[in-house]
Image 1 (cartoon, rainbow, N blue to C red):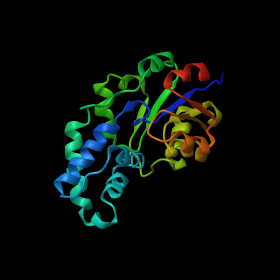
Image 2: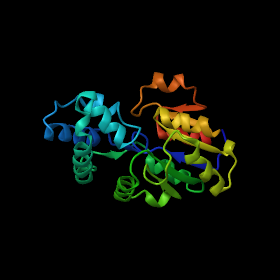
Image 3: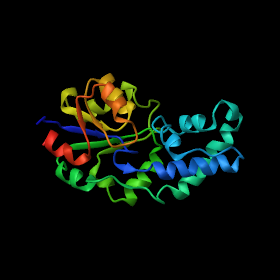
Image 4: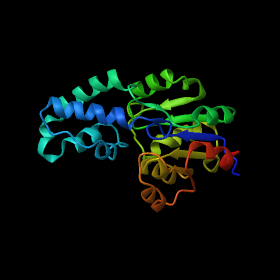
Length: 214
């Protein structure tokens, strides 16, 4: 069992299962622009690097001239439909309650506004000491400049902090910053990719964090 003082959670695919609503808004955007829609699984594979990359990848090189319109259409639609089918991941409340004496933050490449709307809707905002979104700082995961100031702010040692997430950027953020990493294997990223990054810990579900970190 490893003692930790600061828990850094990813959001999409980790605390919430949001891939369906994101994919639906992407396909609404493509349909509005008369661009062929895509399989949900393909769109979900584009999630993790922020909305700009999501739209770029979904449009492809042949439709990049529509980027500005697509970004607005997606953002407007997602703002209205972000909670249509999205739900909390298994054991989220149990885990947050168990670790209520630990400092906890969310770091996501999702816009902070969307993240806060969702954490408020699910009643979990009060568990977190800070929520950092894609538009909160000039830096995005996996840039260590994103996490280093927070390590200093909360006064913890790097070895007493852990990044928990289902994405490549989460594991690389931890490695780039020199903190521990815990890969969530049942999120949006295939487990073989996560294992290839050699995270310090791996878990099938969030409930296993209680065994790993006490």
